[in-house]
Image (tube, rainbow, N blue to C red):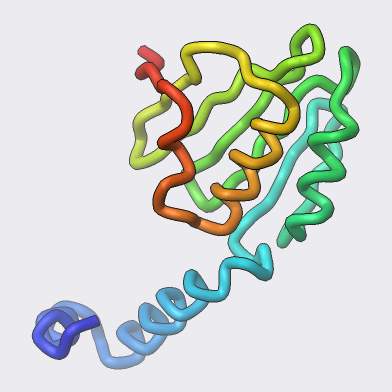
Length: 133
C-alpha cells in the first residue's frame, strides 16, 4: 500500500478498521499455508485451511461416485468434475464464471489447481476459457 492510498483509506475507515484491513492484506501474502482456501467434494467432505498436498490427494481421489472438487477462496473458486478419466474445469472470479473449452487431463488439472492455490498470476493462461452465462 502506498502512503497516499493508506491516507485515503484512513479518511474512510476508522483507525482500528484500517489495522484489520492491513492484517487481511498481510494474510493474503501468506496464502501458501492454505489459510484462505477451503475445499468441498461431491461426497460432502469439506476441508478448511486445506494444504496443497491434501488438495492434490482430493483430486486424485475423484471417481464416478465422488466426482467433483471445489476449491474456494472467499467468493471466488475453481472446481473440477471427473468425467471419463478427464476433468471439466470451471472458475469464478469477481462474480464472473468461466469454463474450460475442452476437458483436461488429471495432471493438467492438478497443475492448474496448484497454480491457483499458490495465487500465481498466470494460472489460467494455459487453457482457453469461455464465459458461462
